[in-house]
Image (cartoon, rainbow, N blue to C red; front, side, top):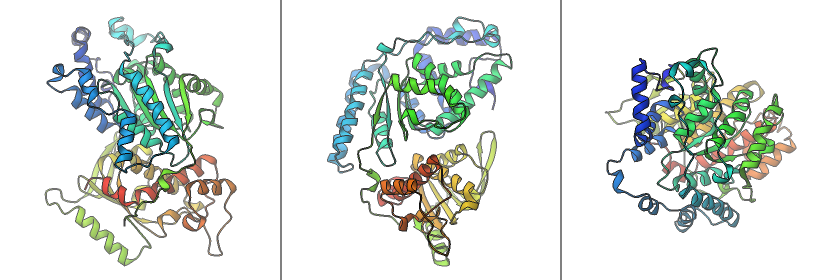
Length: 497
């Protein structure tokens, strides 16, 4: 990918550069709308793209000048109004603890209605293009924290409603706030790494710090950032985040974060964790850290299960899943194509069978190859419905396959993908490594997580392939999400058929 894609002002000539700079300087409304048009190309983060397209549409409304911000805000329900509406519609069940969290979201919503983000200086107006290429970029003068709404850091275990609360808050943001972004943390870090790589390529090996200009570009794109499933398990992410978060806050960006962990537990036992501690202290000092655990797992509220998972692997179930695939791909104007090429990160993936909206894989096609979270996010962004066939039972000898499968399930859940699957054993037991001589002991930690989820050993089976705390949590989250994705409600609302 060319670096100029992330540095749109590096024109083919100096005159073009100066012309563009002057136009952007004298027409601030133009740069605002242009930034939205650029976003579709700048961001390859799978889970944010559709929302950015929606932002772009809103920013491009021809009659924009005739609609006042007050009028537009009155058309949008506030968080507490939307929450009450969902309860009245019986979409949600009222909960005192969750109501207290909604009031925190409402308080932040009210502050954002009158929030004017600080002006972000454009270095192109202060330095020539030549000096920008060969000089270090100085960090921004920190904005006064007292003038910036305090961010929210919502943490809790599986099933505490983190994603629902994030979506509710984002969907009810004041309509006058057009510079906003809601993104899964996996997708955000993929985008950040691409931007950092492009920044380094643009300034060359003698260039300065690439993090600050990336933070500046992100702040220009969104003054409100909503991160879902914030987690730090990689040293590269940890070193970037420490400086990125500080720069974003200095630029006046308001962040709402959901996570499985209290800030103190982030990147626990990680390499060079001491270097990440300042980021932890920043989260605790600049965010309202709130525990979502209330003793209720909202995913455990009974739902009618839909017929989307089939076991065992036999002829009858193969015929049934083939009928379903045929019924969803019967449109003659959108025929099934074999080995469709899908481009991601400058390389190609091949989809064994697919239409423009429905894809079919065997388990080994999808999880037996070295695919990453970015690959799975791209697949679930592209295809609203996925068929996954021949999922085996996975023990210690298939731990890598199990990890990829969990990553794929996370991508499906975040993208609201409709999943049909066939498996050797009930899909909730594919991680079980029980031998023929009877069930194996379940660790105390595993048993505690399963109790929290309301999943018995008979349902999930016992597994020793996940031993670390993060692995057990990922395993439990995947089981919980598979339960929810197997519900009738999910089958009726997810995916594109």
